[in-house]
Length: 112
Length: 117
Image (cartoon, rainbow over the protein chains, first blue to last red):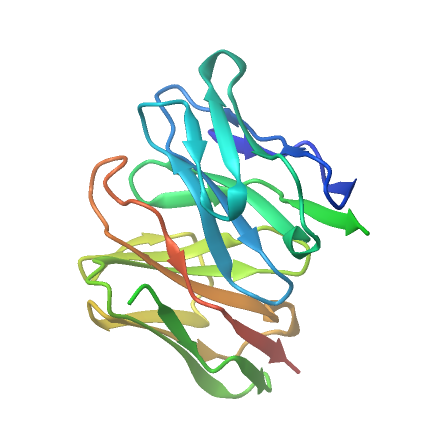
């Protein structure tokens, strides 16, 4: 079955440090990939998306992600994290035209 | 306006109650979604409406009954729920489409937190 995997359940980084959150997918065709962020008790906010074209995608809040077909990955990066980046991060992809499925999520904690 | 509005934000109900969750968007989107999210878990798809017709039902129990009165509104009617149905219920909308890639990104509301006693 098509799936999205986030290998890291919880990551802790220091404020100002760089960040990389991992996402792997298993699909036959070109996937449509997303990163969403969720603060506690809140809805999901789209950070960025990849549909086609340039494999390095820029998003909001200083985030970027790179699509690597050879590694079936779509990792999220940020050069310098801020305390306000602490949240749950979900990688997601469409199964078919209408079903968006999510990875298990990675909880990001920021040390001051 | 890029908002999806959900009401109520919090709902407490007994197992014999009937209640409804409501969702509204004014982005001209033609697809609307209900997701269920348990604590520390990812959202799980329940229903998809495309062009006001139910297109996906992820084998959701009949005690959850969706309704799409028009392209801007989505309801979720709740009846005879169980305590394990307590969760955050998220509504989302997208441009919609019948081919892969046409749907675009999903815009989510803040959710309705449901507690079943």
